[in-house]
Image (tube, rainbow over all chains, first blue to last red; front, top):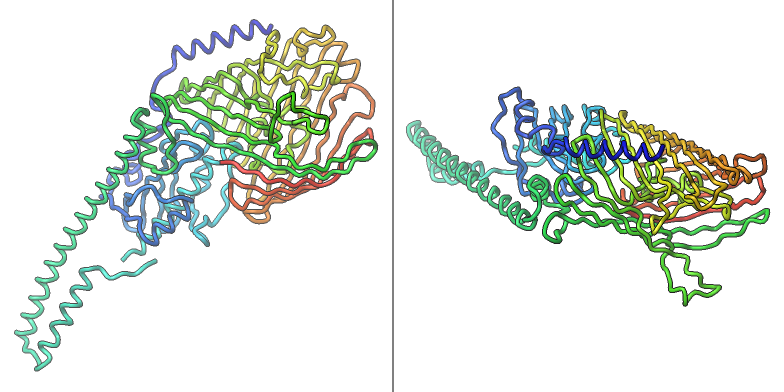
Length: 176
Length: 435
């Protein structure tokens, strides 16, 4: 019996190797397409937020490390902003598109996922939990987000990005 | 959030202020006022244009700096594949180091120190010892975006020693061992192939067992004695994700090799993939569902044609069933697991080891994000096929404190109610980390 099982497994594995399609791993939506979709095909001209001074301190507190660049691009129309942000889960960066409307999360979408574990964070059953969240005290989310067993680090990275988008939104919304 | 004067506003104010004293000598006429306003308007327009030019220069400078940073990081990742290398370059932080001709290498680790203070009764031994139980280093390498290597090297119980240095008092309890080491290839976005030394996909903590991820100083006794964590075997596996939240594993791997010397206990059948017998491989399948936030449901089945690896004719085939649920909702957590082995052959049956089973249930509550409390009730029996007093039961109650998400301090109290009356009761203290 065991020999038969082995042979079947080997045949399946070889077959899958042969037909495997080589395409970009884990790119679910190009950032440009996400922005286009968010603004119904008519995105505003992107702006740049300079991450310096207190903005940098706040971003560093949320991320737990210095923000990776001096500026971050965003798209704004009235009280609605859209952000493309990245953070590493365990080893690889996760790229997320985040839309904030009047200080609360409208949409979170994982655009590129490169980790070998924790892939569940890309599905709406997880990301929909963020809808309506705001920044609470100490730049924490105002509600708890249920994690995924075995995907702790990816969940943590997504939470950081959502907090960061809310923080940046707050910053650009009050900037004179 | 913040208030600041723009250079334009500041200059306009200064200009206005400078103009007023000049006209203060007498009340200006309407014509003079008009001329003044005109001059100010021209100055405002000039300053606006200057401000725009400055903003453009700053933007260009920022762009150049960011591009230079990305270029530097990409140059560092010169041999790496495009997508991931660029992503690392853009993210800036946590950039792995590069080694060899291609790809990226990352290191990490976890560890835990335990102090056990247990009193034995009914013939059980006292235990009063401190032990750096596990020190593990990860070494992972990504060859390209779809092919990677992962490994864990473990030093258990702090140190090992030459045989010649061992004495009756100093038995050097430690070991150095591979926990796993495999190559993984993404066949498609939904299907992976792994080959090497693998963690057997059964139970909750066999694959995810970093100390900050579970309650209790010691790993629970059911996933120690029935599912012999850390359980690794050599083999090949297919991992599929056919639909959101669903995962299946099919693994063909080396099997256990139990013997009568330890009453056919499955834990003692682990061979560690070191010149291990491979006469009778095993097949493990698992299905897992995580399609609801905070919930994992999993079930595993394993079959082995000869769990004695041909060394004992009194031992035959064996199979394992395991099912578990792990739930986290807000501050509440709940873990529950059941596992059962059925062993064929007269040898295991003669000592009741033809059935080996256990279960536990573990509710927990986060008092704050940093502090969680739990209790756990464990029942297990490695000789459940007989009616003798072999069942073991243990209550645990304790606390985890996470000063950082990756660091944990733990304390718990254990109370045993074993059928044979040999109990070890007392408290355990530990510290653990991962990075």
